[in-house]
Image 1 (cartoon, rainbow, N blue to C red):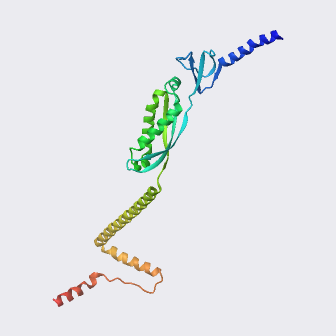
Image 2: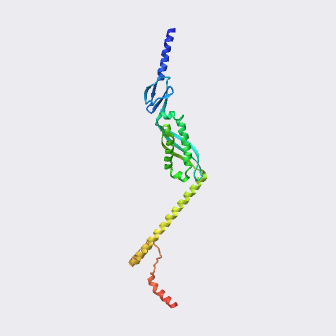
Image 3: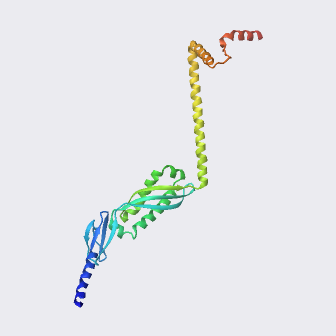
Length: 255
């Protein structure tokens, strides 16, 4: 019995050592190995891997895209409007060795870099530019954050400004501005319609002056329209040329 206990101890110890030496990495993972404190040149790829425990120490790094939700940031725009803005950042590790060696915690560092860059960039633009040219601001944020995280082996693929919280007084002012803009457009459209109608009337008058028969046809058409309404009153317009001689005679008599 005593001999069996001494024999089982090396077996248990060897099994423990072998379990710690065998590592399985998923397809989306890479293993950064430190051998006696020194990092190996190339990270381990996916599959079954063997390391020397406890000489080697393995750190797993995921290569999948990480979605980072940037918490709401207090921003004062260039035109002195206080707003709250939050965004979402998409990034992934492209160099596992740098992500471990160059920065202590690349997730926390990337989050802080995104927050500070968001406040810095949006503080240099006016509120109208933030609301209208959001796509260009997203591209600008992506370029700046990616430039800062590149030494850490982190690639920022996209940055999207998700929500802009405006103060209540700014919302009311924007609503009044939008209403005034709609009234202005309505007045311009109405004036343009009146102008076009007047231009058509001038063209019609010019055409009738060139063709006197057209005026007579219009007169007969008007009588037909009045008759269809079953009215007892019929209006007969008198041409000015008919009474013009009497007006001229009266004018000469008074002189």
